[in-house]
Image (cartoon, rainbow, N blue to C red):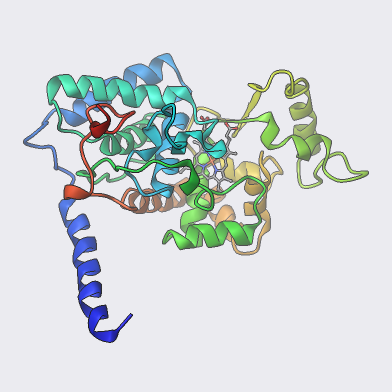
Amino acid sequence: MDAPLLLPVLLLLLSASSFATAKLSENYYAKTCPDFLNIMQDVVFEKQRDQQATAAAALRIFFHDCMVTGCDASILIAPMEGKPKVEKDADINEALSGDGFDVIIRAKMELEMKCPGTVSCADIIAVAARTLVKMVGGPYYKVLLGRKDGFVSQASLVEGNLARSNFSMDTMIKMFEAKGYTIEDMVALVGAHTIGFTHCKEFANRIWDYKPGVQTDPTLNPKYAKALRRLCANYTTNPGKAAFNDPFSAGTFDNQYYKNLLNGLGLMTSDTLLAMDHRTRPIVVKFAKSQKAFFAAFTSAMEKTGQIGVKTGKNGEVRDRCDRFNLEE
Ligand code: HEM
């Protein structure tokens, strides 16, 4: 690009990004929907009380949304016949649990009755995840508000933005650094695996088919491997079979996940690598020793996450329904 052109473009980019940050604020809905946070609290509490899988489901949805085209509720768009595949259709998003989508839809319905056309689905996801993390014992962190919902949701944009459980540590670090995270942010964020579950297919090779002549991944605690083999025995005929990510305190957001990693109880290869790689192991040890240190790092990393690719003004809309763009009506 020519030098004279570069400056105005740079200025435009700078003003656009600071504009986005300036528009977000904790009390964005103070005048337009003063009950927003109370409504969220009530809806989320009721859903989590009835279905304890909700917290993990909503937290994962939030992360998967923010990593692909930013925190803009693109993950909520429902597939439509004859249209290109949406984010939700991408194979890595297939296991996102219905309870997470359900709590967001319920909150949106409630909010549309009280403050029609006001609260974005992107903000609902962010607040639902924060409220649920706190509800199951995790830290309270700041969620700035005023995100708009995006106009794009494409399965083809997913690849390369979300890590897979068989990725190397180099690839995972590169992926997180590309989003502006530090290695400590990454280790703290994956601590989200202190809640929720993972389907057997994600770790089946570690317990049955590690490599020729070796059945079990030697980095896996043998007793744990045996228990997992029992649990997953018929997972191919029953693909819904899943194991808790943290077998000791599955429903509580705490630092037990890191203690597990140090004892060979990491479920996925990507979990186990955190305790083995020289760049991440010291951080795992720190978080295993101190829940306070984990919570502080998780808080900071989640606040960063909530700012990724945020749309404001005309770059987005407040959807009437979270699962479709307004212009499709
Ligand atoms: C190295 C990065 C990561 C990898 C490879 C990874 C991979 C996975 C996989 C494969 C599952 C199991 C899906 C299933 O079988 O149902 C899972 C579950 C989960 N992940 Fe991650 N993840 C990563 C990072 C994160 C981050 C950063 C968060 C949130 C901040 C997160 C939150 C969750 C939660 C809460 C669950 C449980 C979901 C449920 O129970 O519905 N993960 N992850």
